[in-house]
Structures are given as structure tokens and as C-alpha cells.
Length: 509
Image (tube, rainbow, N blue to C red; front, side):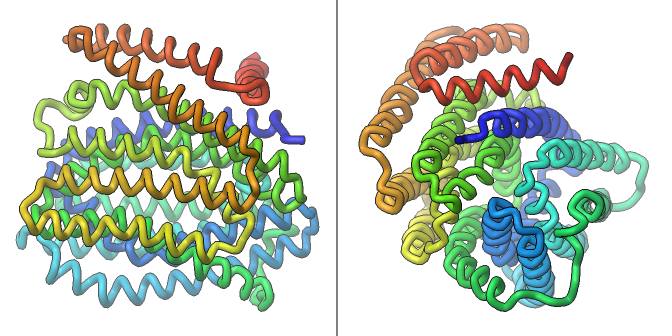
């Protein structure tokens, strides 16, 4: 039986974490943009992107670590869990060294000789780059600890620590006002310190609460290492594609246009990360049970979890995305002021639309990862995602707007989702009726509501102030939510939402 109680409880903690993180993150972005200025804000996003490019190995092993921990925890064998934990830690330490070597050679050369950075800011960019490498290594070492916490579904601690991290990031922005010197360099240094503190807290929690399974030793299991690397070997293609499609696009745009476009892309990505964070946290509450239901051979429950989490993810993101898509410029001006980077409005709309598609995809790729044999899946997914890079280069070379480049990325996201669905349907022999019902709700009912609300909203006068904006959007959000509850959900999905609400009220008493 699907543990609706656990899903509801975990969703509440992650939802609470997301709301506070979203508010803090958006406010922090406003302050840091004002403190650093558009060019330095663009440089920070650009330089950090280079380091992320070299951490593609980490993404591959992160998925493997989470999968293998979920599998062993489902079987409840402490020794096996500890073996997976120690083996994954061994692998992540090796990945850290690889990132360090690549970062200090290829990355350093690319930063100084290929990117379009003003010469006067190159010194600061190099310092930011070094701090970013250290921050990335810290985050890589964190993966086995956070994986253990998520696999055991200790979402309350995960939520509170995430809030603590966001608050610390807000505090360091204000600390910049008391420092003299280059604010860009100081900001990168303080951010590194925050990540170090948070990583230590993850480790201490695991040592205290999962002492038997989180004790470290120098030994590792060669068989598990082989299984994890085999799994990750093909997953690596997918991570290269995801990192390349996002960070590679940022680098290409910089080479052709400059750091201002990176500022616009950075702002758009931050808005998207803020609203998509809720959906990713929501899916995180489902992911352990998606993997464990497959591991235990519960096909019907596995299928229900895939469709339920995909549909709910789409609806939840649509509720958050509607005001952003309809009133993008108004929201950006309230948030950042009247002086907006060029392209930021269009970038934001396209990236949020792309995330609506990605919200549907998450549970499907988790099902594929639970299966484990991902060679064919990852090869085609990687090709589809990486197509964006040569297309971007060709379009920009021909003089097309960067907006066209992001539209191409949106189309490729749609094709990627359709392939993911087809692959999982074939893999798990998904019910034809459930599949038809899923597409009816998502592509007919869901988009029908979305378009109706969008068209009706556009027929009204544009909001002239914040009060009018809030009243109008509150009405349409409420209408959208009611229609979803009445028509878009089956009994099991409604039960999950009711449990989540009941869990919240019980805790508030």
C-alpha cells in the first residue's frame, strides 16, 4: 500500500521549506543585484556555471547513490546500507579530485581566454572561480549524507537545514555592506563558508541519528562500486546533457553577447528555481517510494505513484507559474525595480514554460532509474538535450535573437518528455486506460484550464498596483485550484492532498 501518510508529512515539511526558501531567495537576489550591479551579477552566474560544467560526474553518482540507498533501506539490512554509504563516499571523494583537476586546468584557461568578461573584472572573476571550486567540492562530499537523510525520509531536518542555509545566505548579503573592498569576491568567499557549515551539520546529523549505517571506513565493496559505476556510466550521458544544455548555453550566450545576457539568464533561472523548488521538493517526497515500490515488485503501486506525482507536480507548478507567466514584467519590476536587464522578461516566461514540462518528466525518469538499465534511455535523452548547443551556436552565428535559442530549448524539453513517457510505458507495461486518463488530464484538461485562465486574465486591465495584482491573481488561482480538485484528480490523489492538509492542521494544534 502506498504510504499516503508519509508522503503527506514529507510534502508538508518540504513545502514549508520551499515557501521560506523562495521568499528568502527572491529577496536575497534583489539585494545582491543592487549591491553587485548587473555586470558583476552576470559574472557571478557565469563563473559559477563553469565549475558546474565539471561537476557532471557528481550528478551521475548522486542519482546512483540515492537509488542504491533507497533499495537497501527497503530491504532493511543495516550492514548493506553502510556498505553502500561508504562506497558512495569513496566515489564522491574521487569525483572531488577530478573536479579540482579539471577546474584548475581546462576551466581556468577557458575563464581567462575564452569568456567575454571585462578586463577590469577579470581579477575578481578569478577569485570567484576559486571559491566556487571549493564550494562545489563541499557540495559533492555532502551528497552521501543528504542521500541518507532523504532515503530515511527525515524531511523535517532536511527542511529546517535548508531554511537555515537560506537565512545564512541572506545574512551574508547584508554583511557585504560592512565590508570594504571588492563585494563580488567577498560574497563568493562568504557563500563558501556557509556551504561548509551546512555540510558539517549534515554529517553530524547522520553520525548522531544513523550511527550504525553512516560510520565511515576505508573499505568499499567492489561489487557495489561496479554496479554504481555501471549505472552511473550511462547516467553520465544524461548529466552531461543536462549540465551542457544549461551551463553550456550560458557560456555560448556570453561569447556572442556578453555578461549582461548572463545577468538576465541568472535572474530568470532564480525565479524558476524559486517556484520549481516546490515541485522538486514535492517529487522528493515521492521518489523513495517510487524506487522502493519497484524494488519490492509492487507494479500497481509503482504505476500509481508515477502518474499521481507527475499530475500533481504539473498542477502545483501551474498554480505557482500562472501569475509569473501572465504578469512577468510587473513582477520583475516590483522585485528588482524599473531597471531590468535586456531579455529578462522573455527569458523568464520561456524557462518557466520549460519547467512545466520538466515537472511532468520527473517521476518518469525516477522510474527508469529504479529499473537500473538505462543505456538506451540515456543515449537518446542526451542527444535530444545536447542538440540545443549546436542549434544555439548556429542561430546566434546567423544573427538570431537569444530568445529564439531558448524557444528551441523549450521544444526540445517537450520532445524529451514524450520520449520519457514512451520509454516508461514500454518498460513497465503501463495501463492503457491510466495512460489515456493521464494525457486527458494533462494535455487536454490541464492545458485547457491554463489557456482559459490565461485568455480571460489577459482580457482584464493590467494591474496598476500591488493590491490590484494580488486580488486578481488570488481569484484566478483559487478558481484554478477548485477546478483541479473537482475534475483533475482521482480519489487516491485527492486523498493524498487531504492527508497533507490534515497533517498540517494537526501539527499546528
